[in-house]
Image (tube, rainbow, N blue to C red; front, top):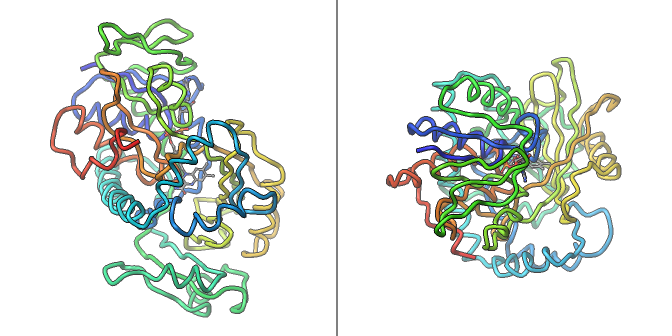
Length: 407
Ligand SMILES: Cc1cc2nc3c(=O)[nH]c(=O)nc-3n(C[C@H](O)[C@H](O)[C@H](O)COP(=O)(O)OP(=O)(O)OC[C@H]3O[C@@H](n4cnc5c(N)ncnc54)[C@H](O)[C@@H]3O)c2cc1C
């Protein structure tokens, strides 16, 4: 089959790879000149297979009124019409039952992703600083710490502040600055943009993939109620099947297809601080209270965070970048942010934080999008699931929870 993959972020690229592995021909289309031009750029670099709980939760429900007020919150919201509709679904997802359903589904998808990334790397050796660095989550509030205690089957370890400081000597904190930490040894880090660039180069070399960059996607071409092509600024591109992986552009495209896809752009920021090989940290560290992650990458430290519900502008905000620098200076011995590279991206987020993977209401169009905070972690599993479902195979992990009909 010839399959059009719409979007060359990490989700579209991995989808293209798994589809070619399954024997299909792919045409990969994106408006940018190169891959990872959207949220898959300088993201938090965490391959966070165990930390997959959704944003919508009973606890979040309690915090929401405060988030709507202006201030230095890690999460900011400016209400617009699209956010109101999305937000109503978000509120519906703030139940313990939904949290349990999402967590179970995402844990299975994350585990599949870990295995499928290994499989990909076995066939396509690419270097993107992948390292099992272990993830240390530090807590500054006793109630958050108590709520985060791992269950009996969870391999994570609970640490005192002294144990955290011994594990991660880069932390420039006193024991009294925080209440403890949770450490998961198996978690990984890796540079998503470097992964995308190298996978893109491999796909371009493949005689099964036609790459159409600098090509803006418009509306679908529909014949006899089936999508047979897509209009672009370079003419119509036809295929037997399409996969929608346009990140935060997915909702607009779905609308032009005649159905609603509740994917809202949740803006995050990062800085990348070059460190000539002497990273101030050895593990990946998450500052839970401030919603900031720190990842050691080859020759650099990535510092990322915040969740701003403020529309489609992906320009980095100077105030947010300053906040990241301030938090980092307060937490680690980082001498200078002189060459820190600022970046922002729009996470394609569903109200229940679950990806949307499966057929769409329009025949010929398949969905693989909405991975939100975890698109890098979940990309390989999502791509495998997409390929399985398109081929009518038994999916490699349960797929029902990701079906768009839940909305
Ligand atoms: C600050 C930040 C930190 C993050 N940290 C992590 C992390 O540590 N771990 C993790 O797992 N995830 C993380 N994420 C989330 C992750 O980066 C995203 O979920 C993931 O990159 C989404 O990938 P995507 O391919 O769906 O979308 P994108 O990467 O946004 O790709 C969509 C593509 O579609 C193209 N496009 C859109 N509209 C059109 C159109 N009309 N025509 C043509 N092309 C179009 C864009 O050019 C883009 O290339 C983070 C995100 C941010 C912003």
